[in-house]
Length: 322
Image (cartoon, rainbow, N blue to C red; front, side):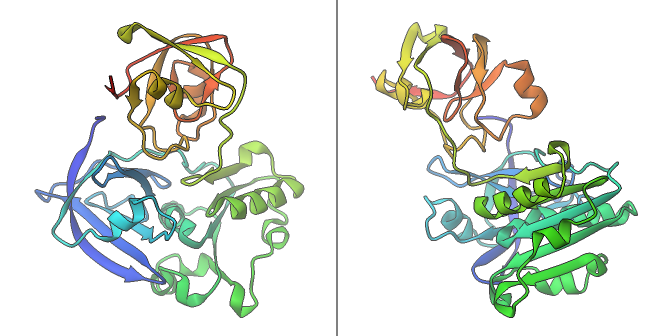
């Protein structure tokens, strides 16, 4: 297992429709590893379940980590297990990792959160406000009753920057209006359901935003895992497998008796990360940074493929089935 921490649930509160707001603190009261706005942590919830949740507290108060977790009725166990956590219980977490960092040089920042996608925006707004930066935060939801954090957004230090877009009150967000005039010097940050993010970012491109001005946070995503057949060699196992056109590396290895440790199976969490010793990966994940992808020395086995006829990999967690 990668580096982890044991923390305790210090506070638990239900907000909106089935959003558990958890405050996590160190067991001994010491400061937790620092984080920057946009970061997330992994929650290890037992039975091999690992899920990623954005940190929504202030990065200026590293004594605790705050999370907002929506109970997902289609969950494979992650959000349901997180909702069962009670005050006083301990849980294993990863140190913070940031794949959704703010560009503090931007002249203006547009933060748009759909539903539970508001969570990273809270930390971002806090950081931008403290730095004296120009920004606005747009919180989109179907109904006021379903939306967490409304009370604190109405009475916080950056409340003047908050705009609510509540569909059943006739105030659904109009992306072109929100984005107008910001395409030259603004940066857009969006988080929420995948369809919502696509809608917002498509509108931003139509308004003239460049790729470098667009930032998205994925936790649940559709991923295309198919492609041309290739081989994967694992020298430490003395094993070479063929990965079929519609097969993942994880599935091919399992057929050969090697069960790779996985969690999200969407290229988000990093559980199935492996080192690449030979060949060129075809990265399909959202876990690695742009710089890490360019190095081509790591790969997410659940979704990524190969651009070369063969990949040589090592350094991933697995168990032998036979």
